[in-house]
Figure 1 (tube, helix red, strand yellow):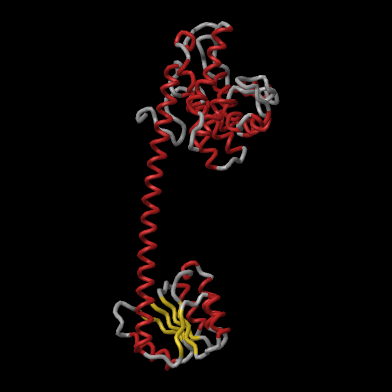
Figure 2 (tube, rainbow, N blue to C red; figure 1 turned 30 degrees about the horizontal axis):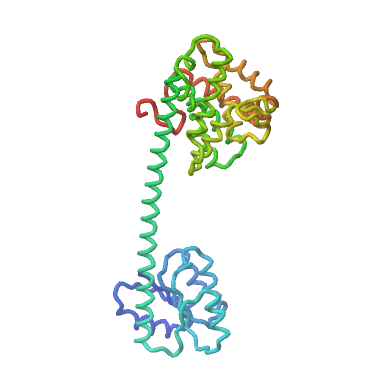
Length: 357
């Protein structure tokens, strides 16, 4: 432990140094000017500061104020030496951050006892702070592990639905990645962008409730079959309704709203404009764009440029114009996602790959 003693009297410094020399494991630095003391404190971490009140240029109160401005000295014990008995000066000192006082003339036994107690307090303070940091690290690691497991479970669940729908996993990877690009382009909060990125692959999870004969029918659907397909939104909402976590709530909003349209002509509720959750408006563009550029048993895959033109054409009726604007502004990144995640089976950045999932 290291202590700094500041007094403009060299004889007082020598006397205090001698009185404290017998204390074990204590290194003393003695300064006879407050400027030198503040310079030393800027380069060394002291565990105790003892400062005289009345000194040339700077008083002990001013030295204390200067030290307390430094983050590393917010909690360091500071003792002021003074012959002043007036309550006004002591109150100013306490308000500046002084923890204790030593009256002149002082007794060497009292000095050693005060310093011993304050150094012991400081040591305990450091140990508690270190323990708190260790706990923070442990909590951070545990939280990261839980988030990683949650992410993996979402990916596996989304992959299961995609496989049942005849996909390889690339579709949900692209939808997740494109949704993230749009969310970030809208300057949404980073945590919210991450939730959208994680939840977007679950947009069609309600297809688990659709019959295979309808879900995998190679030809055009009848009106009755189309109505059954549309029920996948309601099935998904029921699976995710009343969630307690941010992720589940974002997923429920995406599932329930990704087939709504800006002009109110979508389903299942016919919501319009900003009544449609922003996460659903974002995912709707990513989902439609990828559906257009993907081959299906009943249609050829469109080129990315043709799909881009269709997204732009539907701005203001099917899609939120702001989301379309961001889609256009980030077209190079989106086109790259469409190209690089076209044929592989890797999850988007930050997701488990197929080899692990």
